[in-house]
Length: 261
Image (cartoon, rainbow, N blue to C red; front, side, top):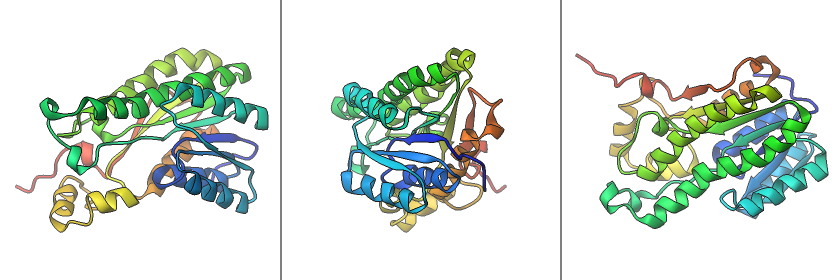
């Protein structure tokens, strides 16, 4: 898939690994300069170097999106360095590990606060600051990464499903408010995507793998590149009339459970 992002500047949060890394590299392969954001310096610097090797400009900024002061400083650095922001991808997100997956009456307040701060507050903080710049430019693309868990709740992950559902409606609200400034705001809801984290959590146990694949009509997990291509389309000029939408990339999971009668 190829689109023209030449001359565009993108920020991709949580782009040191997994889906964020795939999005950052795909944007660079299609002509964009990319600001890499991560809380892990070694990973973020490596991705920034990969982008530079593609002939694009890149800058790594270590920042925690759940900290508004750090977000403000990140956006300030980007504007000072590049003079504009054309695309923002709010990808950074976290969830509880397996041991923390318990019902609501046992779910810890600390895990709730931690997940909401990153997965929902982080989207708000980054969008708020970047929108100020895009309003001045009278143009921009904001792409939020939610999850099918924000559409069809999953058990034992109450903070994650709440945050990801919030991201979907936050996307719609932002789309309404920013449309007068020619800013498109859209969302992607990935299904089960094969990253280093999910390989360990879901796909190292044959029984767990079987259960997950039973919910996916295509009978396989997705790849980070599948989400990157959806983001690439939404970032392109070809998607200029799309705003307030959620693209579901889940192999058919939310279409309905497969039943063999």
